[in-house]
Length: 170
Figure (cartoon, rainbow, N blue to C red):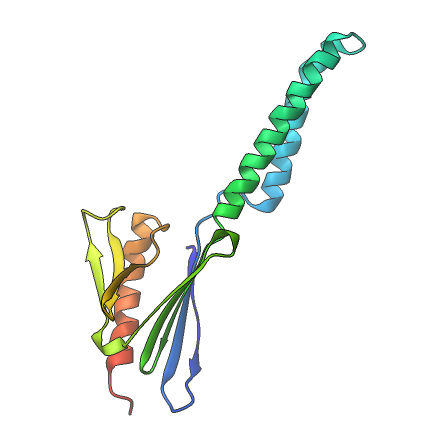
């Protein structure tokens, strides 16, 4: 799953700090990217063997270079746009969601755990089973890039973490 709960830490005044990291799924790892570009280059250049040594090669070569550059640029842009990391910190007295997006863009939201609720929108949101945190006068999305199944699996864990945070510390 493209999210993980970090091991809990102890808070200074007692209690527990839970932290959740979420990121978009990558279907093409970096090693696969290199393999894909290499294979694409080999397959595109294979027909060039027929025109090797003729002036036609020089007419086709710039277009092949442009095609490879376009594929490379498109996949690189996809990697850049997918470099999102959401961090949800659940600590005594504070709930903080930080989203580090592509090209250095960062957004942050903070709420009081007792007054914050986890809302599920089965229909009507931008995606099915849309999860939001509602509190401090705002409603913010969490894990919008996850699949519906992943959001369904995340919901009970988030609810349990919020309930644990609201319980009085013994």
